[in-house]
Length: 289
Image 1 (cartoon, rainbow, N blue to C red):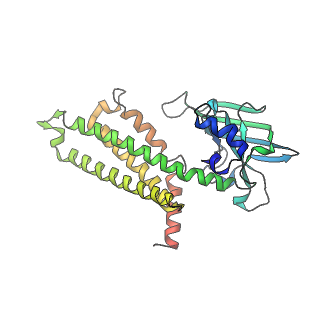
Image 2: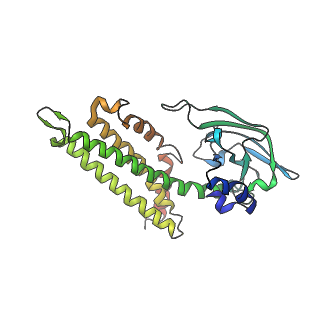
């Protein structure tokens, strides 16, 4: 999205075309370990212009896919005296640039060899032409990436929740305990009904957000709503499915235990629940309609 919307013709030829063809992979350097990732105005990465070059110094982490990417779009401060949301720019940095270091692949819940990388850029030089969009447009570019990205997450969560729901129903209709099938017990029926309601409501909310974006609306309220609502829905449905499976649900014999671990990330990436709730509340208090 960033390259398509903000890239120059040179960017599109060098990076976007092979990206679409599946020949290379991208990564994005936004989050930093020293500051709150939910507030991009706190970023400490810097970049200054030196003749025809941009010199970048940055320490980023959770730069997903950096260990297999051809480039990282690094967000860094280029204009420290500008207004808070105009201080940062987006810069395309090839991962084979001198001074670009992958410090480690960060172990996360249940994973030791994933693609969430900590990276460090020390006096990395790239051509001035590698500036993506205009100088000081980094925050705008990031928002245009994150909005659609959050919808993609919510769509994927629907698939995950539906899979967990189907596993729960299959287990309930075949497992016999205490004189009847699980599906005949009121508490399990409640799990099924509540899960179906939550999945359907999230599906309709996601469709509404997508429809608004298709009409050119930034859909900020709708996207924030589905982000925290969907993360909660995903957790709840998988949790109920595990409960119906009993000990089997936390074993590696079903996909549920991994789905449960993955679901926990949903409340953090692309903005934690608390930030989205606060953002929605502020906007609705100004204009409840």
